[in-house]
Length: 154
Image (cartoon, rainbow, N blue to C red; front, side, top):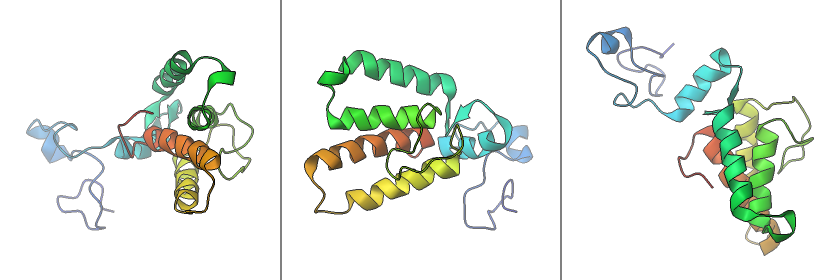
């Protein structure tokens, strides 16, 4: 197991500061600790986590998006994708935004990441029409942020 090892044995960065790091005052901020690493910990420890974010953070993001965009009739396909990504991650949608997979009420980090991967594959298809591409890009951007792969909130 590489978590906490001084030199990661598995090739991945360790998930947080070791006991030795803590003893010398190293924090998560300066130890290379990322939101994704926090999400992996949250999958085991925090039942209210949504990907790498807190439920409250994702809820606030969705509220801000709704205020910014306005009514459903004025939304672009990009923002519909972003909204759908948020709703699915929060467990408020019947199916995943890209694959349409139905499953657990609140998807795990693994399910969220699989949906990001599916969106990435579709976005690489250059024959995809603009409207569909905009929706997929919006869902992709929302899920990438929710998973902690990016700090750029859509």
